[in-house]
Structures are given as structure tokens and as C-alpha cells.
Length: 138
Image (cartoon, rainbow, N blue to C red; front, side, top):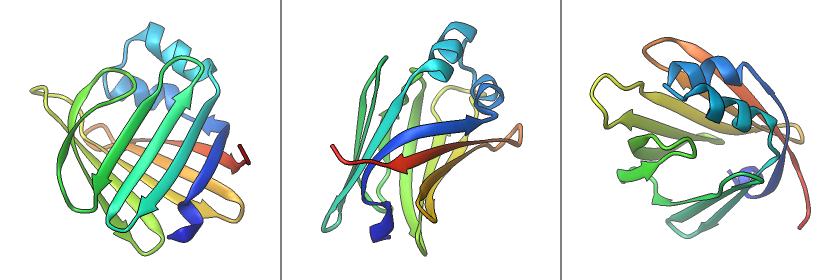
């Protein structure tokens, strides 16, 4: 779990356009999302977790406690109910769409070697994408 904490910079991604399409992101936002540089800072203080997501387009901050549901507006503007869980060294983020007929997702953050791998799964359409981040120093 401690391996997840720190600052990460996007290195590359796989299949993100298909994932964003599956969750209902419009083409303009998808194009912008695929072209930008993104950073994640993951922090933990006791039971409280924070993920700061920054980019050249938009920023977001998630504050949560494991197992407690909260409302989230995603970087692409979707409204979801979110919960986080820790399974071994993986931080699992469950997003349930608020909009009727919307796509639910599971987002898994885990460290493989020196890389933070974030796996996105659009559950109804079974579309998977990955983003790979390298650790960096601010």
C-alpha cells in the first residue's frame, strides 16, 4: 500500500479512447483527454486518503475514507457514486453511474515495479484501458 503513495506523472496509456467512449464521453473531451499530460498525487493520513489529479486541462481532488460512499464528478463531467477499497496492495475505486443507463466502472491503482498502473474497466460493456505513470519528484 505504501508503494502507491507519492507523485506520479503519466507516461503512456492503452485503449483509453475506447474506455472513454464506453462511459459516454463525447469526442471533443476524449481528444483533449488523450493529448494532455496528467499527474496524480496519492496521500494517506490515517483513515483519510486524497488523490490529487492535475493536468494541463482540468484538475480534480478526491478525499475519501475506505468503504464510505461519496458523490464524485469525474474529470469528464459524469456524476457517479464512488467507494474505495484496499485489496492487498491495490486501491480499488468503484464508480456507480447516477444517470439512468449510465456505465459503471472499476478503477484499480497498483504499483508494478517502478510504475503505477491504473486499470479502468467499463463494466457493462467490458472495455478495459490502462494508464501507466512514473514516479517523479515535485
